[in-house]
Length: 340
Image 1 (cartoon, rainbow, N blue to C red):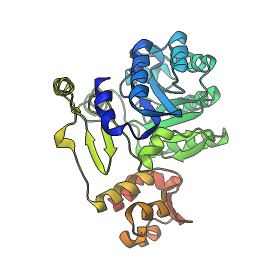
Image 2: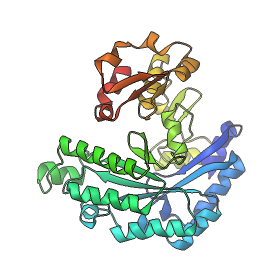
Image 3: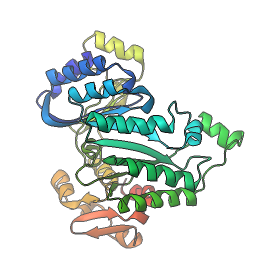
């Protein structure tokens, strides 16, 4: 709350139309603490009355009473970290909730009155069969959340999962081919159920695309609050310090807890690359007219138009938009790298 007050001095004139409470498990906090945070934000920032306000929740850490109080406080969107509706897979991931917890959480949220609910599900998990994945997608669709995020598990070196897969070989890794099959199977199932695939890892019922995440992909500004949080404003990118000690010392001095070493003002060409890279995550792709409005030059005066032919069937130019096809999303990193 002290950081909110400090940073509001430079941001109070901006209209806030999206608030996202996430990172870790914020639903562990009491509803009274969440209420204080939101009051503090509203007292110090110009928050739009129709702002999208999201909180991430773990199915094992919310109750009907907590959900009702969230809603009464103006939180109008939930992001529920389900990951899987298979207990075996949840155990592999080390999650503290069961499939019944997840199922009940979504139903409780709907009963409480939440109209906008995201469900996170994950594929490419060692020990997860195609049948398990289809069952998870099917159950997610059955519960009818307005938004579904689907992510492929990234196994990082040094983690317990990495050890179990590549050192003790307790679990067999999912092949790239199976991983991609899982991805495309889920998208087909979601489309049939009326969900629109609007970003590489996200699908939503019409009108329920995540306003907050669209900011990251559409080159909009954002302000990060809290330990290690990232921000982008006035053409500068920076992060808060990651040391709790440094963070608290800065707050005591009434200064923004920014890590001075993280402050980066990229070159104009680097910002163009970021614009293209993030824009290609969206199904609608990069708006070439917006690119010219932001940077004052035509997109293909900067980049080689022959890339469209080089990635034929994967990268498409149409009506001032450059976008990836679904097959192009399979090799998105390789294509996006051409613009960095």
